[in-house]
Length: 334
Image (cartoon, rainbow, N blue to C red; front, top):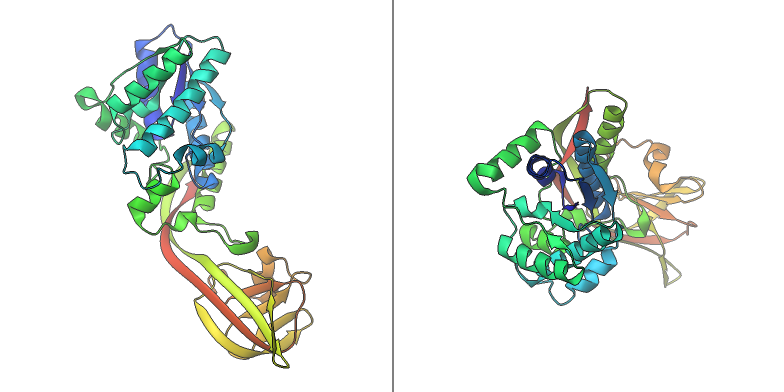
């Protein structure tokens, strides 16, 4: 039997109950969730789902992260409420792929851990899955393990196993509706970014899995960290009445800034504004990821840094818009 896996929180209990109820059944966990955004969050959930299957000695398989396919399926349904038409299209996409996986393996049945999630509509899931099952001449195994306190037991088991508890369903539109302003969806321009809270969580989950696979004990400890997210940045120079906009990247953790001041050159390839408005650094001198070290700035310094190909002389105008939030990340203990 192929069991579609949405996350480890639901998987620990659901897979355990499935093995109890179907002791002679060969079970494969199939992780296919292109709806999860951003990719760092997708990878975090995938790694923790694999950890669950490994500990339960269940085969784990992973579908591709074809997020563009999900976006196409959800087009026009962005403003649908939770459990609405967008969720239905999401179920169709994921369960159809699960049915394909089952058929390709010669299996006759499939099911999904979504059935244990209290945020999902069981009737909606069942209708979608049975329609798909008929399409591939398969049986959809419907199990309601929520009954009799199952939901509470599932959460308790997930906590006992130190599963990664995500704080939103998965897709960008659900996240925006839930939060209003979602820092998870903000990326630095030009591909230049510090590590986001999601990336730090992903690193911790990878490290825990590595240590456990080596036979070492490892636990996750939550802590809060102030994270700066860059919304936009621009840099231009004016000389002789002519203004030139410069292509630039902006290093993360930058304070909100709107200023106009003359550049003072500190050394070749590095310039500083006359006022405490930040630095401009040539890419050849300092890579974006270690610009702070080159300039001698600490991790918590929020001085803006612009990365340019070549410095220009003249009156500079810079603008940065950024936000900060207190985000939850993990530390590893042994």
